[in-house]
Image 1 (cartoon, one colour):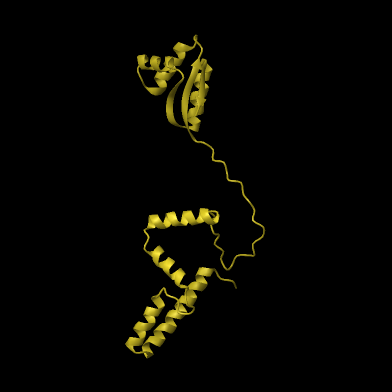
Image 2 (image 1 turned 90 degrees about the vertical axis):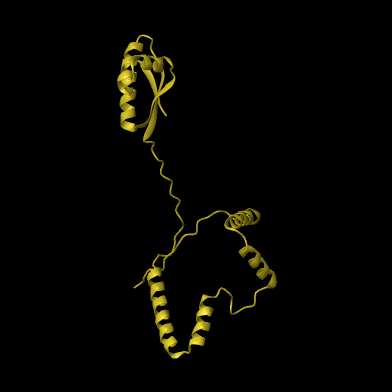
Length: 179
């Protein structure tokens, strides 16, 4: 049975902790402190590190996060490294076949701004009355809005309401665009 990587890692960690606790009971305190320091150490115990690399690491460790971010972006441009997300593969994953590029779904716009573009001169009184009722403004304000066409009547309108407003105004003789 194949188990996910995290489950296997947890089992390994737990068994290592059990072995460590069993060995701690048999060791003197000074030896325990040295082994804990070695476990928490970031230094390599095996191969000797090139002094140039060690100097670079020391200098990088003194940088702030902003400076480190700038360094990374500079290295990516200098070395021509693309920004690519690294895929996470679990132990239970099947062997990867050729990657399939999925087309990103196009998000349909759901919120619109209703804009009065123009209107027939004969339909002006009907459109003013409809704008007055729709916006809840006075007759004088509705007249100013309609005469100021092209003008946005409403913003942040859901698609269904925007379509109703468009059908109503266009039925009266106006021209509406949804932006």
